Every structure is written in structure tokens, then in C-alpha cells.
Image (cartoon, rainbow, N blue to C red; front, side):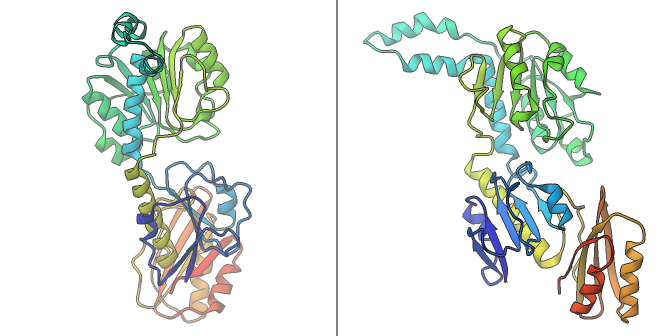
Length: 387
């Protein structure tokens, strides 16, 4: 029986993926959890139990999870790329329109109208909320992952010109990208040529506050910036200064903070990007399936700290080992098996940065003695006998 701890409310359709005969689900953090499913709960100050083998984030961003700490302990961290992509894409398109048409200002103004002549007041005052159309304008999309590709393609369908930039564009994403999207070679190409800029990149040391006074200075006058990825991608003081002097005409952000609420020119949306029933269901189902596949078979798909690594299960024993990506590890594992007269029938090894993962199927049932010997190899972070 695997103990699964939920740190946020998880859609029932996701938890239903976990067979009740194999899984016990609780929200009691005192439980010795084998796996955790969460959304936005901040885990950085959380004590990680020794029993914990995997964390599944029902969403794409994982900055609320202490990934280096998890890696050191041999804990696999999963996310759910693409599961909420359509929900975010639709809100980005709404953001393009909100940035262009002064819709929120107009709604707020109309809500305060009183008297019997509201219709006349509307006709007299509506000119204050005139805007522009997005058709024919140029949108820069920074980050062409699951969400960025959908946004770029939708913008093309709406008649916009689109320039995309992603130094790590995957083959799969490239196949899905509309052929009318022009590929930029650097950020500067986006900054200098776009009327609208939207960001769909993870928050890292390299991307933190990369939209700052220097970047904004190279943008077109009156540029509109959309941020549905992470608030910290933008320097708030710099964006407010740029709005005050007219360099930036509007900033739409899905991550309000004390610096960005109630500021003219900033439209602060209360983190609604993935807040649709469909997105929450899709993320929960994907997270639960990733977690159960790893716990039951050792296979890894969509991990942010370990490589994707899958091997069909054999009829007898299977051992899965998370270890440092250093020479001679495989040799030591195979020698342990050989010394015990155990034949390895199938094996796979994959690496990601400084960490590697090895799965071995054997023709024999595996004992705790074998597990202890493998675990004792210098550089092993965690080893598990799966069957």
C-alpha cells in the first residue's frame, strides 16, 4: 500500500486514477508519504519524510518545490506540461484584448453610472475608452513550449503577425508551430519589433527580472507586455516607471502583488491562467498517472529533475536506481548482480545533468541483501526493488 499526501485540493477525477487497493490518500502531513500530489503549496520549508519517493505537481511550474533538496534525497519531481496549456492560452488571448481595448476601465466606469439617462451617459463617455484592434499587429512570443505554441498559433488565426523565440525549441513543438510564425534568433529581435510581448518561460536565475529597464528601453514605444508565466520574470519597479512615462502602454499580469495592484496601466488578474475545470482535471489526472507509474513500475515520464526513462516490466525482479551521473556506476551494479549469480535480462540507463537513472530487469527475484549492496555504492541516491 502506497501512502499519498495531498497538499492542495486535487480534482477527484485525478485521485480516482489511484487504485484504492494500492493507495491510501490523506491530507495529514504527519503521514509517512510515499508520494505527494500538490498544486501551489509551498514545500520549501517542509520536512521531507524519508519514505517520500516522488512529488507530482498538478501544473507546469515547480518553483514551489525544493527541487535540489529532492534530487539529493533521490525524490523524483514530476510536473504536467501541456495539461493546462489551453486554459492559459485562452486567458492570454483575453489578455491581448484587455490590453488593447480598455475593457476593464470601461466596465468599472459603467458600474458607477446612475440615473435614468445611463444610455446617454454611455454614449457621451465611451470615447474615453477607445482602443485598438490586434489584427495586423505584431506579437512576440518568448518561449515556444506547450502554451507558447498554442498562443502563437491562435494569434496567427486572429490576423496578427507573430515572432517567436525559444533557444530550446523541441522537435515536437516545432512540428506544431504554425509555419507563419517567424523565428527570432534572440530576445532583442522580439523587443525591437513587437507591439505586444508575451512570456511563456520558466522562472530561473537566467530569466528572473529579464524584463527590466534595459530590456524595455529597446522595445517599441507603447508596447504592451503580458505575463502569464511568473511574476518574477518582470522587474516591478522598472515596469511601473515605463508605464508612467508611456514607454509601456499596458502590463497584464496574472500574478498580482503589492507593487502591481491598483496601478493605472497595469491589469492584475488573480492567477486565473489554469483556473478552469478542464485544466484542473487534466493536471490532476496526469499527475496521478505519472506518480502511480513511477511508484508501481519505476518508469519516469515528465520529471523536472530526473531523465525520462521507461522499460517494460519483466516477469521476475526489477530494481531502479537513482544515482550521480559519474563513471563506473553501471559496472558496479552489474558486478553486484553477477557476484550473486543474478542475470540481468534487460536494462536502461538515462542521465540528466548531474543525475542518472538505471532500471534493471533480472531473471531472479531480488532480495533486501541485493538492495542494500546497490544502495551502498558510492554515488547512489536511492535504490528500490519494484518487484
